Amino acid sequence: MTATATIVVVVALLSAVAVWMVALQQAEIENKASRIYDVAMPKTFEATRVVRGLERLARDGEAILWVATADERDERRLRLQTVRDDSALQGTSEIREQVASALAVLDENLVDMRLSGVAARAAALTRWEPVAQSLFNLGVQLGAEAVDSALAESDGIFGAVQAARRSLLLAMAIIALALLVATALIFLVFARPLKRLAASLRLAGEGQAMSEGSEAIHELQVLHDAAVALARSHQQLAAMRSQLDRLAHTDDLTGLANRRMFQERAAQMLELAKRYGDPCSIIVFDLDHFKTINDRFGHEGGDLILRVLGQYLRDMARTVDLVARVGGEEFAVVLPHTGLPVAQMAAIRICDGVAALRTKMPDEQVLVFTASFGVAQYQLGDNDLAAFMHRADQALYRAKAGGRNRVELAD
Image (cartoon, rainbow, N blue to C red):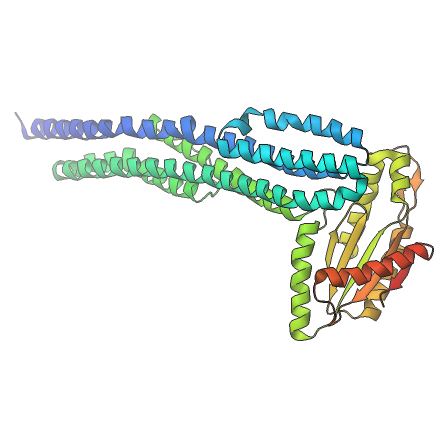
């Protein structure tokens, strides 16, 4: 046998060894890749359905409490039963108990409101707030668990790829002893795609965007496609988390801070005012004759008025101000570093601006509406936010009694 033939035989044998070593890893790699589609992706989709169901229950449960009539509340409660019957919310006992507990609190609120009328709404909302927050928290928890599961599958794939890479590098090192050209060829065919795949899996684990590409080897293409799908799933869950956080602190109708967010931030502003002796003022106002608007144009017309007002308030407010919807048609604006005279001028400007708004209703009629305002500046006697707002509310009542569409100052 010639030297050339010997080299060819040796290279062929070493190449066969390399192929055999890679083949040993192929089954494990494909098994790990298939788990992304069979385990991680279904869990992600199921978590998405559960989170959306919990979000709907929290949002619609609060919305029902704002409905004026008992019959309409009962009708909307009946439609909400579909959330409980959703198969996605029947997965674990924790989810089922959370949903059942939330619906029980909602039913208790509806019974209380039927017996006591709208006077029981404030108590019902107070009871519902921790329930809604608990639903949001459970949704965030389930989303995080889905992400962790997907990342665990990614780690398994990464480990299998690393093992395959080590086997392949060892085979290439053996072949390099016989023929450097053969080693270079194997490196081009196998090692570089594995490096790209390892980098892709790291990006997928970090939730970074990945570009789709093509690989010459089928198994590597399968893994690359799985990594792209995993990255997209990670990004969707991150966006879902952000959306849940926004929904937990923002009024969905007006885009302003909701009552929960208002109480948290306003209390912080008052603490800063106490600590540094800075002035701090609050404007409390609500729409005049809003019930008449609802009776005339229905809740669709009332919601349109609230959206128009919310857009106006977002446009005119300073970045340091806290603007919130604290009730059905009641709003509040906290102005840090602002004394009573400046707050009064701001309230007058808002009052005039609201009166100047022109809203085209569903029946094409242009509606003009007004609001009444109460303004107060923080005093040392205000022990907490409730006392501070109480003085502003008293001024608001005087504005209502004095003819509406006006601004009154607290004592």
